[in-house]
Length: 139
Image (tube, rainbow, N blue to C red; front, side, top):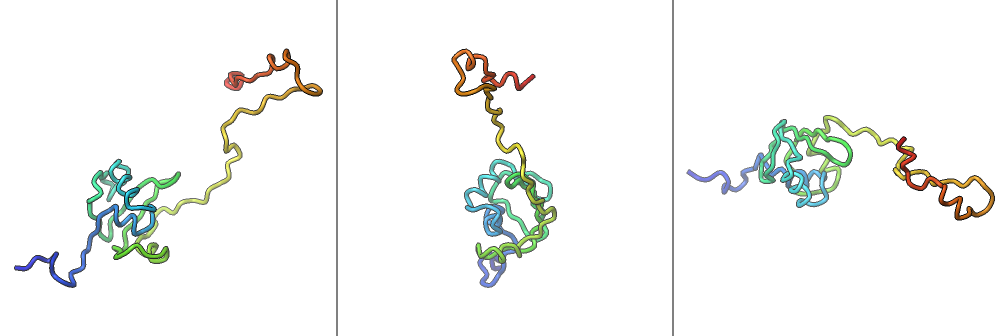
């Protein structure tokens, strides 16, 4: 009996999850993809995994955090190489596409600048009385 792995022309129907995430262009490097898997942030068919060598095949559902939302991806095909973006997008079906980001009005969480209600530069006494601490913002 011959080993199917060594048979020429035998297609592999599975691929390492870190390599597939890299092929599908979800992560810029394979090391970043492997790190996400090792930290236990990726689920295959709702099962948390922690080994980058875990294999996936077409039909599997991947769930993982990406940027500020959770991606739910169905594996459609196994890629041969990390090709251009249109080729990478053909490898998966996005089950929950991310919503467009809304501009937040309060992007920075800095307290407002203290204001001096007077003319010209504040005196030493005026500066002492300015609410610089931000404790007044907590009330």
